[in-house]
Amino acid sequence: MHSAPPVSTSPLATGGFARLKTEVLSGLTVAMALVPEAIAFAFVAGVEPLVGLYSAFIVGLITALFGGRPGMISGATGALAVVLVSLVAAHGVEYLFAAVVLMGLLQLGAGLLHLGKFIRLVPYPVMLGFVNGLAIVIFLAQVGQFQMDDGEGGRTWLAIPDLLLVLGLAVFTMLVIWGAGKLTKAVPAPLVGIVVTTLVVLGLGLPVRNVGDMASIAGGLPSFHIPAVPLTFETLRIVFPYAVILALIGLIESLLTLNLVAEMTETHGKASKECLAQGAANVVTGFFGGMGGCAMIGQSMINVESGGRTRVAGVSSALFLLAFVLFASRWIEMIPLSALVGVMFVVVIGTFAWSSLRIMHKIPKSDAFVLVLVSAVTVVSDLAVAVAVGVIVSALVLAWKASQRIAVRTDVGPNHEKIYALNGTLFFASVESFAALFNPKEDPDDVIVDFWETRVLDHSGLNAIDALAEKYKRAGKNLHLRHLSPDCRALLKKAGDLVEVSVIEDPKYGLAVDYGARFDGEVPK
Image (cartoon, rainbow, N blue to C red):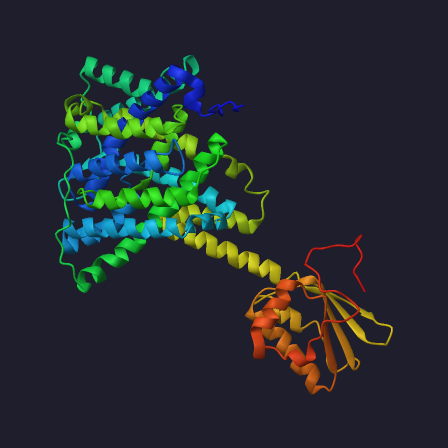
């Protein structure tokens, strides 16, 4: 007797044609929003527009097929582009391609070593700061559409009539998106906004910039190209620092976006799988003349809000993007940039964690500080630096708080020995507080330190115990340690000569037990 095959519970399997239509249309919407950003990021990096478009296509396609988060969108990003500027300026575009290949190899290594799991070490305030910072970055990136070249290498605001026209069309697009979202779910609201605004601009002949004014997107298929750089140590010395920074930024942005999309869709992502997909995508991109890429929070939000939940949406957006380059450049270049600005403004509103403003006065001041700090650093620097700063500050705050929480209760045993019952964690930040708890000169000849509610975490803790033992030894008194947990005893065993084993005893009248274990709430004796 054979059991029935498992029934698929994926959104695509359960939704049928309607779900497939939503996924494909969501991919089309994302592809339209990808075009101007890919071109803009290519300009930032100092390369041809098609380099950015090819990157968005290749990275988007491979990560959509094999990434750890169905529905997440990847492509050429500004966070990577700003890193590449100096490399291209100093050494040329071929070194960019080599750096992207090496970046991909490093990301593959991170995936194989399962380093993606360490993204869980990013505290929630850092995550909120990341989201808010990127929302601000996305908003500021749209400001350029309200400006023009001043003829002297700078930028100036548009004339008042032109400025109001661009702003009005952006707001009109936002209203269309809002209205379309209320009326129907059959077609993604952002797509409706882009199409309606484009028709209005073309029908009325309004004088606004369109995608074609940025650059032509017409081209052919990307071709295989081995980076034309000498295979020498000098080349490695040049590209390796850039590759490391690119790999870190790409993985951090991708994994944080993965967590954000997973939270919004109430699903789970696979961090290591995403690392492998990002790495493979960038290796391939480097060999096909691309500038590399990673997850894009703005386009991922567009996809989620448009109903994209499966790999079909990501694959569709990549294929539509390639189709634009090959066949539809003429029509895509007609899309007014004002419509895309309106779409991105909607993304900003949906991305920014507005709840963080309401809870700012309710959460610990240290968490509020980290949230604001990460947001600010994301705007003025880059994501990798912002997250690193946030994690370091959070860790220091946690260490400081933990260092203040080591305490002691004293008692006298049946043989007149003094018992110190510790509570807290003994590690580098708390050793000074730990040492201040004892008084070797005035204590009796026998002293017991009870670790039932304490754990020793690091070498600093071991050294503190050793220093305490030396003080009692010099005073001619005996120090005994009681109820060390197995991991604490393992640390002491590994420490070898670092700790005076002669003064450390595991008492025969009690078992060393795991930290946190309880026997009816009573400490064993």
